[in-house]
Structure formats: C-alpha cells, structure tokens
Length: 454
Image (cartoon, rainbow, N blue to C red; front, side):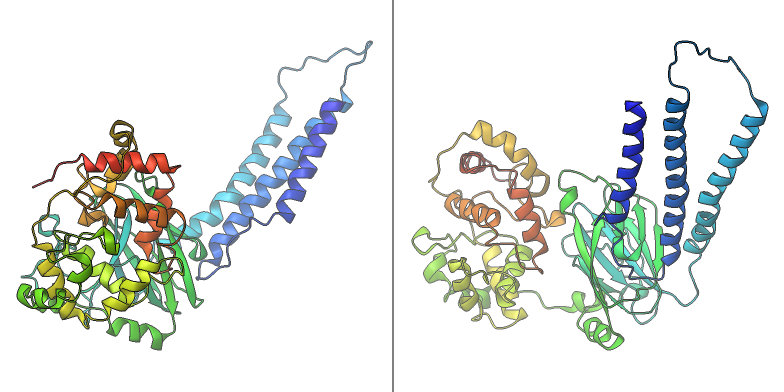
C-alpha cells in the first residue's frame, strides 16, 4: 500500500511541477510555431501514458495486494489484450511522429526568394558571409585560408569580390524576411542553435548543412553551440540581432566586402613610429612596457589583437568599468589615434618591434602551472604564442604582473563584462578554472618558462 501511495504522489507531484515550473519555452521569435505544436503533442501523448501507466500500476498494487487466502491466476498469454495494447501504442507513436514528419518536410523545403547567409563555426566563435549585390557566393578553399584571408575566398573569382564578410559573432537580420543559413565547420562538429527561433542544426566538417526561418520579432537573441566541440565549448556563443528593414540596411552599409578589404592600404611603420611617440612615455620607447606606469609590453604583439584592443578602447567596449582605472586611462589615450589608418600604422610598427622575455616578478609552481595551462593552451597555444583562429593573444614574453592583473580583472568582472566584448566574456568564464590566487601564480610561473615559437 505504501508503494502505491508513493507512486500516486509521484505522478501528482510531476504534474504540478510541469504546470507551475518556470522552465518553459523561450518566447517564440520566428515562423516555427509548428515545432512548438509537435513538442506539445509529444508532451501530451507521453504525459498521458505516464499518468495512465503509473495509476494503473498503483491500482494493481492496491487491487491485488497480498492476502493470505488469495491465489494468483496464471495466464501466460492474452491475445485480446496484446492486440489492444499494440493498437493503442501504434496510435500513440503515430500521433507523435506524423505531425513531425510534416514539419520536417517544410523545414527542409526552403521557400523561393529566400536570403542566403553562410555561417562558419570554429573553436570557439562564429563568423558570417553574405553574397553581396550579385546574390552569388564566391568560391572558397581551405588552402586559401590565412590571417589575411580567414574566409579562404578566391581572389580570382569575380563572384567573391562583392561578398560581405562579417568577422564577428554578431549577425544582423531584417525582420519578416525568410533567411537560409548554409552551415560550415572549419574544424570539428558544432551545432548552430537559437532557442527563440526553434531551429538548430549540426555543422559537420566537409559537409554543408542548412536551416531556414523567418524572424518575426525585433530583438537580440543568443546563439548557442549545442554540440560538444572541445574544452571551451560552453563559451562558443554569439547573437542574432533582428532589425527593422531601415536599421538593417544601415548596419549592412557599414560592412566591408572582400574587394574593399583587399584594397585597404598596408600600414606605414614610419608613420606608426611617429604616432607611438605619445604612447612611449608609458609603454617604453620600444614598446617594452613599464610596471611603474602599469603599462604592458606591446612590442611583438599581433596586429589583429592590437587593433581589436584599440578599437575596444575607442568604442568603450574596454575600460568602462568604474574599477578599471588603467583601462579608463587608455580610453583617453586611445583617442590620440584618430582613425583606422592611424591604428593600422601604429600596430604595424609595434608588431615588428623586437621583444624578449621580461624579468619574473611572480613566484609560483611551474609544474602545477603546466597542468593548469593545458586548458589555456587550447586557445593560446602550447608555448603561449597566441592563435588568430581562436582570437587568443600571445602570452609569451608579456609581463607577468600584467597577466595576473588581467586574470584577476576577468574573475572580478572588471574586464570582459561589456556586451560587445565576446572574447572577454569567454575569458571571464575560462579564468574561473583558476580557483585561487595560488593557481594564478602557478600558471603565470609556467608561462614565464615557455620558449618563443619562431
């Protein structure tokens, strides 16, 4: 009897939890309400079976509970009961599957005159390519991919020249216009999912998969990778921003095509040196950094990373936190570099400067640090050499006191909290794998022992 009561209470508790639970669907923001319908049908079918089977189990426990003078009736087969159960099960399974088949048929049938966008997934970021005015994607090849051409476009293909390249985790879409996303993976299995759109699809290396939807609500929606893709899988996030048509066109007009990127002038090192003279009072005459002024080493840092940080300071993505005093100083100083050409000149000069390991100021256990650094090496490289493909800067030769301050800033939310600082947000999450200051010191001590990668 006690077991039957427990089963009944379990069913009642499950039903109450289902209906009062806060964990429901996110608000629908696309045309795929039919997917919600199929999920609800599945819930009703399986929920009904769950209730009936458990109540029947409780009934049989009570009805046929042990009595001293009662004897069980042995009936090994009951054809009538088996037929009834088979028919009911078939109806239930068909009720769950048939609506899904109709929805799937619609899901794989892309409407005519649908916008197309290429989505590229890699550890651990997203990027996008639009076909440009001709509506045709240019040819790409993995052999052509490099730091200067991360999308691997063929310069000799005329269809490539007007392709619009979005090297960002943020994609903008116009409201009420159907869009087809062609999904590519550069490395391992990923999965593109936006919960509010009710769509998701795997990205498989060597295969182009796709999905389509029509965004129906203006807003900002998070992109998740829902396929375990490595150590930093949980940091692989982005956003889809649904705009009005006017706002979307304004955003689109600010994006650069492949031909525009090819025509950008190269940085001028001499002009960069002249501009850097205003920065050298803190960062050193040769960009070697200066602890007295809390200024890190800049010499030998990658162009793309220096560019990103200067842009972050200028648009207040970095240095806006009230506790980031040195970041606030850099926000002011970054305004001395007035435009993108000036930034290019400065970073060209700095990236070519010679650099060497700095004096150690932090004592830790490099052996323990090596084990902890294994997590960091996925992005920053085995020798802390940095990696453009994972957007991770060089750690080798940087001042250890600066590295420690940045790790603490990430852990305390002083750095990486701005909505536009996606990579900073990833570092906030990853920095928390170092559970205390001792672990930070150990990791930095190991970084101090690394060798330069030529």
